[in-house]
Length: 201
Image (cartoon, rainbow, N blue to C red):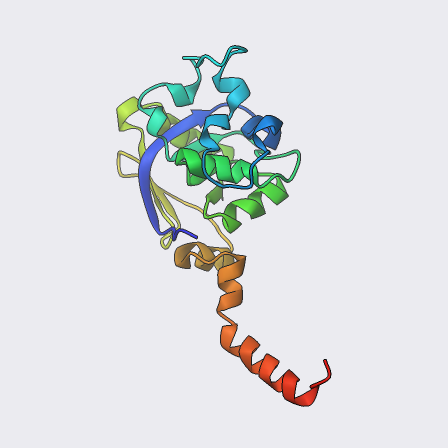
């Protein structure tokens, strides 16, 4: 998993609440287990018309937000089914940080397991980063995970909270497999001992 320490990038604002995982990545894009190529399906029902033509008013079709790395959105983002394709599609587009007042639990956990940092903030502070995101080409935020700060283009900083274990996993790029491999020596020792103590097993 890609390490996440400090991210500086364009922030886009999607002013919607209760965005479910089917809206993030519609069901017709779930036929693959690959994590690449899913960006074309990201918010497909919002980005394209019935004939597949891009809807120019959708934020991710407007420069400079076509290059967004940070997405600011409304409460309960990622509700609905538990499909892991949702964070995969966001990652494939290039979005590695989400800022919202709240997230659905399963989606929130899936973000961390895939290298995306979901940040929850009170609405008053969300409004500040929304204002920063409205600056077009200057809509650049810096997400400093070690310092737990969001820094705006004018130099102002907003602190955010994160679970220390999840913070370490993102900084070190550890997913579930990586965490298991940290215990490789202990696992090997257990298996050797088990073969001696229980050769019949």
